[in-house]
Length: 216
Image (cartoon, rainbow, N blue to C red):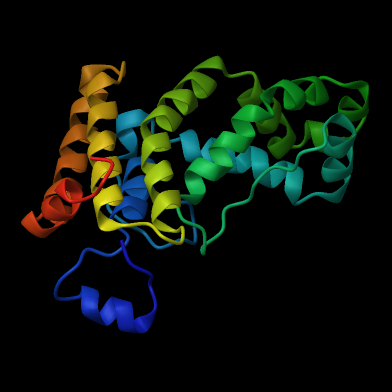
């Protein structure tokens, strides 16, 4: 739950789990190519969700003609993965899901089909992924699991955040998993993953901070 500066990391080697929630997000999705590889439970929610999302984002953002065409259909940009961002997976997936309604018309537009890019292997895969309904359903399920985790990460990164407040919202992540409508076969491994993170964080001193926090 601390910063990754050298002094914080040195302290954490013996006492505190570092970035336990961010690593939980990586474990749920699996890391993309070129990023630090942590043990992945991506199969819980379809291991190819992140890879397909990255393929769509890369196709639009790394080719100038595609970027120019994309901007004629909407005013928002797709989010690229960033090593320095907490829970970059959630940020990227949330924006991609939000722009589904603009991406699909673009992929069937006369402007896109007239491009040579539309008939390349990447262009054909781009079109196929956009109209692959199970992909969007699985993405929504993954986002539903990750959203409360991301909310706590944002809370921790704010000025004035107290340990009692963090304890409360960490507990709410577990409550949100209890209410999840995910298939039990997928949900149970996620609950066990969360429980391991909670056991690392949950100590008597944190509970005392929670009890003494005025709102609680």
